[in-house]
Length: 228
Ligand SMILES: [Zn+2]
Image (cartoon, rainbow, N blue to C red; front, top):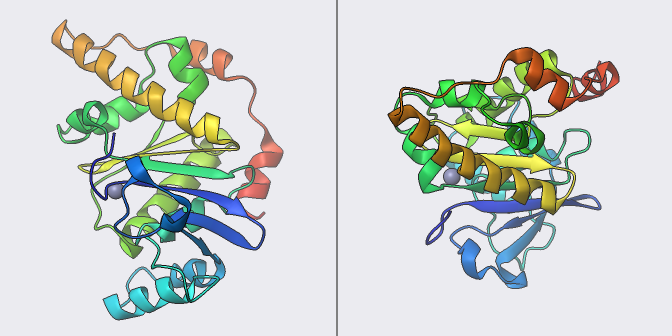
C-alpha cells in the first residue's frame, strides 16, 4: 500500500502525538523513524490556509518535543487535526493501488458515497469523506478539515475513511486495529468496485440498509466534535 517514503502513521500520546519522520519508509519503520510532536503549533498554523513554505517548515521543526529528533512528515499537519477529534487515537495514510485506480479515474466521489456490502459499512462507515486533489501540506490539511467537519455535521461521528483525489487514503479510529481494518476493507472494496464497474456498474446498498448496519448516530458526539 506504500512504497519508498509514501504514507505515514500517527498516534496520540500524552501532550501530543507520534508520527513517522519525513522520508522514512513505512515498510521498515523502526522507533528511530518516529518523532514525538506537539499539536498546538501545527493547529494554529491551520488558522490560515496560506503560509510561506519556510514558515510551514519552521512550524514542523518547532513541533518536535525534542530537538534531537528528525523532522516530521509535512502531512503531520492533517494528522494533528484528525488526532484532535474525540475518540481518534490513531491515523493511517497510504497510497494503495486499488483505491488509487478509482481516485485517479474521476469517479472517486462516487466510490466515497456508495456502500456495496455490510462489512464495508462496519469497517469504513456509512460513507467516506472525499477531498478533491489539493496540494499536500497546509492546504490539504485545510481541505481535509472542511470535508471532515461537513461529515461530522451530517453523521454525528468521525469519518473512518477519507479519500484524497489523485493522492491516496486516510483511515482513522480509536485503535490501531480499527485503522488497519478500515484500510484493508477500503482497498478490498476498491477491488470489488472495479469488478462491478466492468459488469455494468456497482449496485449500491439502499441508504436505509446502510444506516441500520451503521447503527444509531449520537448527537452528543457531533456537539463535542464541533466544539459546540
Ligand atoms: Zn500521501
